Amino acid sequence: MGLDAIFVNNNRFTSTISSTTLNGTGGASVLVFANNRFNGCLPPTISQFADTLEELLLVNSSLQGCLPPEVGYLYKLRLLDVSRNGLVGPVPYSLAGLAHLEVLNLGHNLMTGIVPGGVFDDRRNCLPEKPLQRSKELCDIVAEHPVDCGQRCTGGSAAGFVDGGGALAPFLAPAVAPGPT
Image 1 (spheres, rainbow, N blue to C red):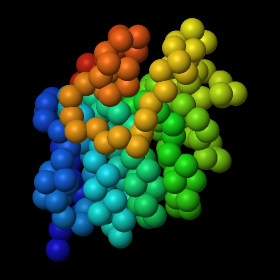
Image 2 (image 1 turned 90 degrees about the vertical axis):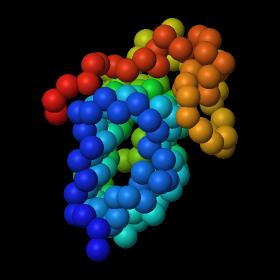
Image 3 (image 1 turned 135 degrees about the horizontal axis):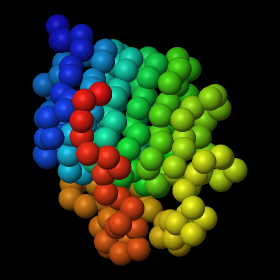
């Protein structure tokens, strides 16, 4: 039997969220890894929590790369907050299948594409026809540097994952300094 809730927030951890890290959290229904300085991406093995996870908070944790489509396998998820990271690429279509999702916060990243139906916070991305997005100039740069979310992020810089550390690098820094949630 695992723990019901895991809070690993406000620590300024700088490692990656690895499969090994996730294995140590058991069958938690709440995972909070907010306000850290992780390197790399959210691993696709997050889907191992499909039978238990209801809340996943990764706010301001320096996550990079693409949001893995496996997040959409977390069918019990009610709250997903990945705001204020360096996430890029399209919003996974698999999120549309999360029937219990009440809160989705993707704000303050550089994601593109369409967000599934509902009223969610998707500000400060490059989502077409959505209000309060990043500037047209920045979104044009994002469009000129498409992301291959098929390649897996193994850590390191999201800027390198996206475009070799070029045009998007200045926009992938953490949005705010970690602090209390």
